[in-house]
Length: 224
Length: 245
Image (cartoon, helix red, strand yellow):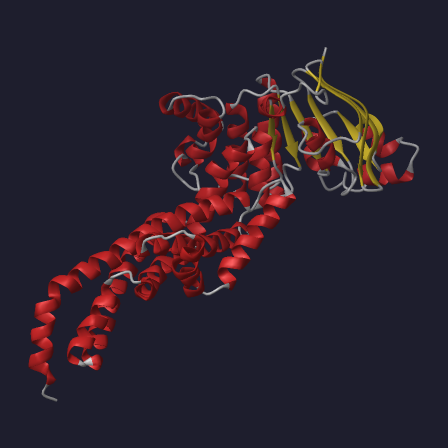
């Protein structure tokens, strides 16, 4: 293969764009990880509402967003909404779409973890005179979050990888820039291998961070 | 004036009647023991007093206030009744100190320093201050119970109620629990204890109430209940274990 020098030249030439794309990727990942987490907490809070209709609504939300591919949602908003006169930027569509999707997954992890709580601790908190909100804030949430650390950090790793989907709605993130690089010299194998390597490197960093978080949040004397 | 006065308390779950007209008086400074076989409604009785379970009918007066009244602040009522659960129910994500402090901080609005001082005072009182930084999973059952008692006492309750205090402990712990209860009662703590542990009852009370099939069937000394009660089953319940204790 004589493509190496050409590929290298194009790579160096397009490096500023690729780095800008990488920054976009990281930006989107961080934003949707935070918003998806926070909105997930809200969804989780209402999943235990005393009102049946609220619980049904939340269950419907979770089922809908886990049950539909994210790409469909993104296309619906990016290509579909303009037909109703609503035009959103690729960034906004990506943030909204991912947040709704990631929040549904996070809420599902948290509700699963709630099953691992000891109901007598909740009863004990009620007997002490704590209200619903206080029990959620001081008893349920600290325990559920600890139990969910592996699932929640995995979701962040998923967010980084899935953010590449955003190139399909014209969001110029890392993978979109790699596409452009590949298109200029037709060295698809090298370009995509490079992309895979970069994602792997970033994921490895996230994994190390996740391990650290798990260590910080582990309670002495308990497995988790 | 009775601290707690229960009249004609009825609790039905669906068409199953658990409490069928219970009457009970608890005086300030008293230590009262309610006994009865499993499933007799002991736990339900306790849970009615702080409205963890809503009574079907009847009246419960706590310090002369009808707790079923519409204007009653249920959460304030609960704060005035210390509840020590069978499994102690410590918050597992908090240290011993944190368990006692949480209510003081979030319910009483104390500063961290105030709450810590008050919590340490109670832990000290129950000889658990050395374990302040341990988590519930790192201490024994008896120690958990002491922390649960400290957590209840820290809120300065009018009464402390115990649900089967010895059932989650080794049988050899009964003596220790009894000594602790006697000490607390001497110090002025009002206690209401439901148990089916005859050994415990005999060490902390002369008279016991016998709850069976949803009603208080007897209020007498253990000796009379074992020897002279007209009902065979009652005599059997109290007599059977007497030799062992």
